[in-house]
Length: 538
Ligand SMILES: *Cc1c(COP(=O)(O)O)cnc(C)c1O
Image 1 (cartoon, rainbow, N blue to C red):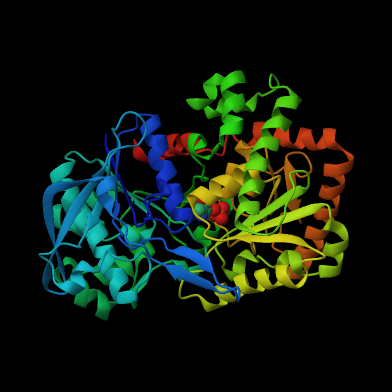
Image 2 (spheres, rainbow, N blue to C red):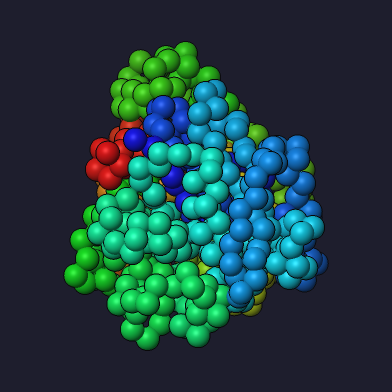
């Protein structure tokens, strides 16, 4: 058995900017756990030399983007191999870089595909340059390089692939290359592929006109493509569903929503996780190593932490929080302290994430929180997303306008490193998505490994983990809710939370302990990858 895992973005560490958010980080964590567990897997993605941008906030609160050039040579090795992909009747050469530093075994290589070669036409050199920067034309060209180029490269590099795992529909054109190789036998292709869908938002499913698809992919498109990918438009999700032996969403609720969106297909669910060794900060690593040494190979061992004294948990949290606060005070004039309840909100600035919900009733918030709560915000907007940028500006302006009534800071340039700092330092991780838009979410899981607690709408993974007021807080109940209802529930919870933190420290510590012991054993990628292995890979 050998699995080929295809993903449009993979986030391995902060030095390699080939990810933009949740999907890429999840892919990186999936690969790391597969390596730790000795699951035979190889991964394929694109090499973006101008990948994830650096976010700067200008004096007017506007996001500005910088795309420093990423030089892969310090991190990976160019292979003496090129494959040829036809794009718009041109032969595009695709080079391959091999990253071989995951885990200790080096047995899970990641192959990065790169069209930036001197032998290519200038416009083709740019295909893999930017991550999600381009128009439909660039996008389908990138997906052609990933799917078909990736398939052809693996044919040379990794014989005996038994299963192709498409992480999102972006990779679906690999099925077309397989179809060619397997004599057009749809059933045979199906028996080789599995597919994970990652979003319940319809716009998140890539669709291309058949005009464009025909122009770019040419002869790679089979004659029955409309039967496989939809009559009027090429829907990558539909194509993937039709050519996979198994498909899944990334939480139970997301599985349900996906079945409603794509009736007639069997779609299961495997809830996401995080790679525990990557997302536990040094403070909690030290106490787990001391008291639960098995946790490194078996994160489920954290299900019993009775042996860890309260004092060590408080001390580890205090230190991790201090690390966050020192950073904040070094990059801003916020003047935060180590003592106050610190609530973090870090997400891509997209409307459905409702970053400003907590500001719905400012007077209430000022009364409740001043001198008791510090808010830390972070997150990037997509460079072309004006409303997203406006949202960031709004948050920053609220902070400026009410600096005497509200302790709040916006930390620029949310990335793997900032996420590590924030998820280890947070007392509380706030999440207010408009249900059921958050397919899973994973950042809140990182917080649990670091003794923080979640306060979130019952969407995605949190709906499966939360015992409200026992291991965190649920905002509202297990129903879809209006913004007004969500805001009212949020304030009630905030009030309860602030009281518990300051007046009932023992109870707070109990919730921290349950956040670790209830949640981390389940919501990690070791469990997740083993579930993929059992259900879909074998
Ligand atoms: C974990 C992580 C995410 C995913 O977070 P969610 O908002 O929970 O989906 C996104 N970006 C970065 C940098 C992360 O580390």
